[in-house]
Length: 512
Image (cartoon, rainbow, N blue to C red; front, side, top):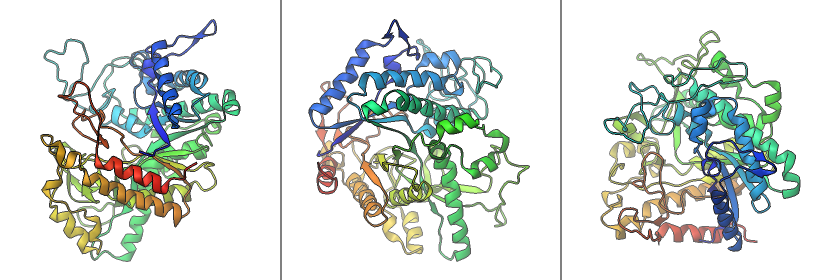
């Protein structure tokens, strides 16, 4: 494949099932079999001249900590995470020189503590509790939210909330607050105890859609310029909420003003801890884009921003719209037009310029604050499939034609849709995915060569067909096919996209 780096995750739960890493008489209470597994992974990579890039947290919180204090909702989580990270630095840091603390804090917190029940711990505003038990007879495992949770203390000055309570508003906000502090605590441990000797780099990986101002035929220049402002505002909420604190030490000004008292405040000590905690590098997982605009009421009048008195969680985005389609149907499916063609996930569309727009947004916002540039730590797609596709999308084509940008409609025929009964079709000969990589990588090249953005790496999602959190093995992001249902040996079969990306790496990545 000609790749010289490999990103993988270490499972906190595998190493410390009770979530609490500690030394007793100089020895860690680690699951040694799990620790040895990662030794094997790291050593095998190095033996094959591949540099490991390790992620410490990709959403697998030890369930014991959820039972003990509600996981990331409790401020103690930041210290338990830092202790786990310390073990990893001590055990693997002689060989691992690139560390990512947290992967996609927005997805973890908003998906798990607000929008469930798609992601653990299934805290959301559904009607019925989702109970997890060994005997699931008669239980609704398809929907609903979990009331199972330990007593939680958001901050050291907060009251302790009772166990097994219904989901509360602002849980996603407090999860985000504490997970960012967990990142910063882990970085402090690394810099204080290990970085000087081990000479590695550490940062956070955030996700988020680059925001594109909504444009339509006949729109005035004044309205389009206003939508540009709202695109930046939407980016501050979607991305800056998580990337500002590790670089500047605090939330974006717009987020603080619009959230009011519903947004937790960092103490001065915490601001110092956070500021520059991702200055070594910043990771960005980029997939789709969002359009953005100022909302209008039924009479076509612009909805004004919230006043200082109105500032709150509920009102923070009352005048803002951002999405990659103009409406949503059953199962979160897009109602066209869409921002690019519909890929094989309801949330994902193909719009190549997103990566260039986003990289420039980061470069402009954090000029001089990131020492070793930006790494694209995830990018890719599931191809249109039997669950999600939109072939011959005339509505989207007509929209892009109307503004003179037909090339972004991404029209495709039905024969592009994956057919699980015919792997010799577009599953292995994955032309849609190759087109995805062509468009995104060309825009990555333009951001680097023409715009001067300091991009240090690009990692595709994913090397092989993998388990997706909400879709299991049915949604295929991989460049290597695996028959999870019929092949007990789970043979790896390369797809055409693997050959394509391997050649791109050879042609475009600086070789030692």
